[in-house]
Length: 93
Image (cartoon, rainbow, N blue to C red; front, side, top):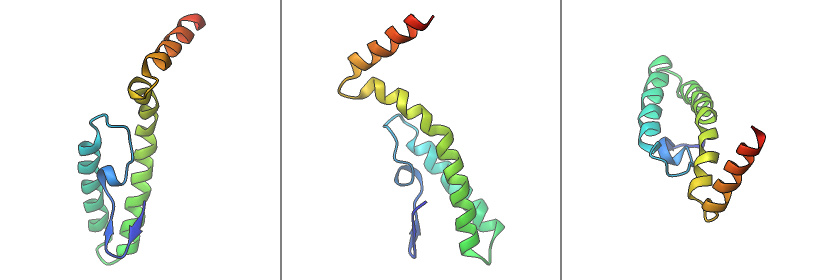
């Protein structure tokens, strides 16, 4: 999590991801988690932001794997990379 004295990043700014429609969902989750962290540490902003950052990274890892598959479908080589994936998957069976 990137922090500075004037703010904390949430949503798309904190989760650079493929454009798969999850940005608004992540932003709402981030805002709720940040609120919980601030409520849990009302007198310790550093502790609240640290707790929020740890949660943010844990959730980011959980959704990051989806981006690889999504990127195969939208990148410039999409038809070829998707065909290669399907061909390889079929050959493994």
